[in-house]
Structures are given as C-alpha cells and as structure tokens.
Length: 320
Ligand code: ADP
Ligand code: TRP
Image 1 (cartoon, rainbow, N blue to C red):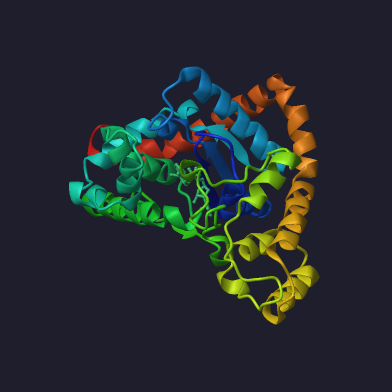
Image 2 (image 1 turned 45 degrees about the vertical axis):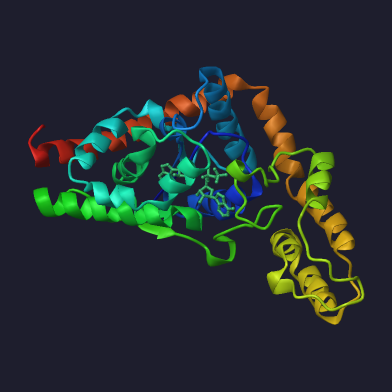
C-alpha cells in the first residue's frame, strides 16, 4: 500500500504532532511503500523569513530521523524539491469550485488567528491535494484537523476524473481515534498557534515547567475525579504503561490522588519517552552532510514517482 503524509516546517514539533501523525508514519513504514515530506511550500503561508524556513526544514528532517523514520524504508523528501507539485496544483485549481475552499475551517481559523488572508492560504487545500494525488497515495496518516482537507482532495480528484477520465486514485485518511486530537496545556487542541504545546525535544526542565501549567479543575485531593474529562489524564495515558494507567484511573475514581502527583510523574514519563531520540537528534544535527544526502536521494525518487502521475494528468487535460 502507498502511504503519504506531510508536515509543515513552521516551528518545533510537539507531542500532538507525534501521537497524531509521526508515530503512525513510523509504524506504517515497515509494511508499506511510504512517502513523507516536509511541506515547505505550505509553510510559506506562515513563515516569512528565508533563514528560519531553511532552519526549520532541516530540523524537521533531523527530528523525523531521530524519532525513528528510516530513510532506507521510507522516502523522506522536501516538498519544494519536487516542483511538479505546483504544476499539478494548477491543473487541480482549474476544476475546483470556489465554494469548496470557502467552506474550509482551517482557512477561517488561520485568518482569525491573524495569518494574512492571502490567496496561497486560501488555495492551501489544493496544494495539499496535489501532494497526495501526485503519489497515487492509498492512505494518508494525519490528525483529525486534516480530515476536511482529505475530503477536498477526494472531491477534486473525482471531479478531475469525471471531467478527463480516470487519472487519480482516491486516497483515504488514516486517523487513529485515540489520538485524533491530543489536548494542549489549556485543554484546547495542542497547536503551535495556541502556545499550548509541549515540544518533543524540549529539555526535561522545560517539560516539567510546562506540565505544571496543564489546566485542571479544583477538585481537592481526597475527592473522586473523572479521568475521562481530565486533560491531564488524557496526556498521562499517552505515556504511561498500561498497568500504571489502570492504577491511576482507579485512584482518580476512588479519590485520594492529587493532580500535582500525576503532573510530576507525567513530566518524568515524557522526558524518558524521548530520551533516546533526543540523543540521536543531537548526533544528526551535528552531521548536516548526512541530512543533505537523505534529502537528495529522496528527492530523486519522489520526483521520478511524481512525474508519472503528472504526465498522466497533463495528457488527460490536453496540455501534455
Ligand atoms: P500545528 O497545529 O501545531 O500547526 P500541524 O498543522 O503542523 O500542527 O500538524 C502536523 C500534523 O500533526 C498533522 O497531521 C496534524 O493533523 C497533526 N496534529 C497537529 N496537532 C495535533 C493534535 N493536537 N492532535 C493530533 N494530531 C495533531
Ligand atoms: N496541511 C498539513 C498540516 O498542516 C500538512 C500537509 C501538507 C499534508 N500536505 C500534506 C498532510 C499532504 C498530509 C498530506 O498538517
């Protein structure tokens, strides 16, 4: 099966990105033909500083490798190394009704958070559709917030196919319900734009400080608590071993556990969970040549794959 996903180099990766997407990238690389990319064309909609964009791009490659992405199994490339993407995006825009883009919640959200309402931001889902369709992807591992973009991708592919004949494969989102939305420190979806993240590679001291900020209610220690509605417990469940989750859950329901105790344990669990990747990342950041080699080899493979589909689309609509 062909797997494809992308992640924007618009800041440091956080644990919502890890559980919502990256962990699935790594699991799926074993049995599948996987393509993952750093979506730097997309990041231009929010990062307006060339040096910073280059640095983030480099860091995302290093971070994914450090977390276990294996470049001998999966093709880990940079979106702009495959300029065919932008050509396909244009072909797709010509069959996309404005109304489909106007109803996109992610565009409206980003504008309400202060991003400029540029055409690139508006047309963002079409570029994403091009990313996906260009590789004949079967499954796209993402968090819940990307579901609408996957629906538009399928709609655009269908419309192109209905107009010009069967060119594109229709992709399916791959969303794991337990981690579809990882909560942030304030209980909203964890996101760079809400300043409520714990970064994967935060130092243990920083993790501890951030975990202390996780919002909880004011139920006293001895009172019973509801684990299902507790943001702190949702994060705890991602990191603790099964036996410990069951024990803490039982203590929540019975009363007698304080949020402070759970926070202290959670901070240690998070730091331990990423300790090994943190070491690997330090080695990778010190070896930019290796990162460059991965990038170049992957770009060749991705471009060859993309060319086949792009030519199919060009020929079908009469520009080939
Ligand atoms: P952010 O919202 O911080 O800008 P991105 O949009 O770059 O994150 O997300 C990259 C990937 O991580 C996407 O597949 C997205 O669905 C997933 N993701 C981001 N935040 C979360 C979250 N809080 N819970 C689950 N998945 C998430
Ligand atoms: N829009 C995605 C995000 O913000 C990133 C992305 C770009 C993507 N192109 C993609 C994800 C293609 C999956 C497939 O997270």
